[in-house]
Image 1 (cartoon, rainbow, N blue to C red):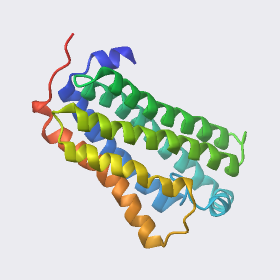
Image 2 (image 1 turned 90 degrees about the horizontal axis):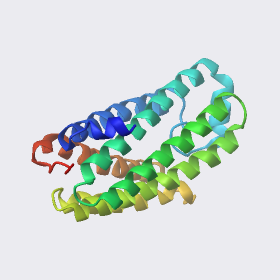
Image 3 (image 1 turned 135 degrees about the horizontal axis):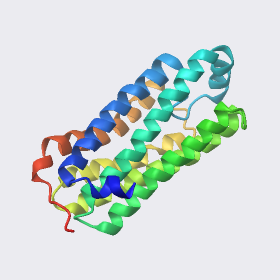
Length: 210
């Protein structure tokens, strides 16, 4: 892991963030829309339990797909550390650690569910804990971007705002489906905007000092 970080320039790290995030969006869409609904993000646990029971093979594919997404999330966290380190090493570290915690908590829950150590309801609780770490990650990421001085402050503000939209996962507001979809799009748009900006503007990023 240390070699992975030290071998990356900020330019390469920016590309890693962008490519990994766009790839993860594709996989998440495939898993949650075409394999098992409510598997990737918190949702209707009873429906998820029924889907898993009725679709064993699809559940297996969903587990593999979601595991790939979480591995990509861990890689994104490390790459973001490289990108943000020139601005503030401490904030960059916190940003990376929170995303890694999110990924590791969900990987644990995923394996526990796949090997039937826990049921789908305990998995939902673990997944919710993971999303708390993720919401905190987005909040700190937004603040780090805002303070960086080499990434547009507007992206930092968008990320901070997006971090608060995750409250829909923690509190059941019984929102209309359309409003929930808009909320989900806001979350994705914040990270996607940062990812695209990093890929396009990577050559203008400051390099880390040795």
